[in-house]
Amino acid sequence: MSRRRRKRLAIVISVTLVAVLGLGAAAVAFAFRGVSDNIVRSEFELPQVAEIVEADPGEQNILIMGMDSRVDQNGNPLPDGVYEALHAGGADDGGYNANVLMFLHIPEDRSKTVGISIPRDNYVEIPGAPLGVSYTKIKEAYGLAMQEKMNELVWQEDSELTDEEVYQQSRAAGRQAQIETVSHFLGDVRVDHFVEMTMGGFYHVAEAVAPVSVCLNQATEDFYSGAKFEAGLQEIDAQEAMSFVRQRRDTGFDGPFLTDLDRSRRQQAFLVSLAEKLRETSTLMNPKTVWSLVDVTQKHVALDSEFDVLGFMRIAQDVAQHGAHFITLPIMEFATVDGAEVNIVDVDEVQAIVASVLDGSYFDAPPADPDGAGPDATDPDAADPEAGDGEVGDAAGVGAADGAPAAGDGAAGDDPIPGTENYDSWEEPIRAGSIPCVN
Image (tube, rainbow, N blue to C red; front, side):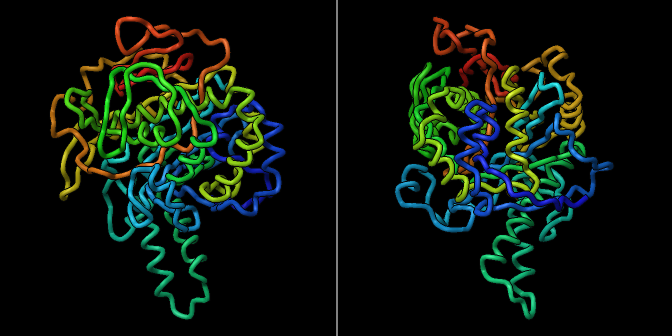
């Protein structure tokens, strides 16, 4: 079913849309009113979903995509200073992979909002087989379909399209393929909206709201991402935030063993902390912060044509009363397929987990044995070998509700850190109510 209704709406950057949870909504909405014409928007459809109905305004499924490209939404290079801060190469590096994929489910009663991280290297079916590729890493659906559409438009006879129109139509094809691929992988689930953000956009969001508090179980460093962190609770700036969410290995002498799955956990932890920072009244009452977010939105964010921002902010106010949880979809093993390092997954298990999230029963079940699933973390071959591959942080997140009990299960040593909870494995769901201490 094609989504064709077009509305002129106030726009809020994706992180603010999902993480701010309605706090300061009036001030932010006023600041963003009138900039809609400058935001990249596109439509999508889900032909494999058996029954598409109009989304209940009380329930939302939102796909958040963080892009690997080192350019803005119009394909323009970023300032040199941003590339230095990203520690991920220049405009010609990266590509159009959706290196961050998070499916955010907001139920009608708002009681169990869940963010589901989808590991980017999961080996899955790509509907439509763009460029003849039927199975590959889930993150590659976007780039494959984008290139296929661009080839078609460039070689189209008597085409009067400008280069900018070719580029944006190709990007829209990439979004369509990525959304359709994720929906199919998760069990042909409904996706109501999408939020897409560039790597540069994440950096500028972090820059606007820094410092942000995060917590680590162990000290760690990584040459490739530029990470160098002490153990425990600490405040980080925008450049450190990029390293924090990109790190997936430790190159130090005695640091923790990390994989790409720990990287997903880092992103979840940062989003919880970012949400808490955005919940502070002073953050969104600062005109400089608000106008920085306006600028980022216009250059680094894409939304679907029906995303009702003001309506979503009303929903988010209710969500704030409960907070949100985060999970990472499990994998069976790391493997090599056609020369590429991939994650082998049990599709039936994945779809059963997603179904339980959607029907609200996932957190009612007893926790799974962390030793009973997932790759062998002691296997050195399990580490993602792609060195220097940059990723954008997730474009959105939600945090704990006011008054939620602090876990008090501290990290980084024997002394508990008030207001934190320790998570030793990426397999453990992050629950609302505290700042997560992660690997």
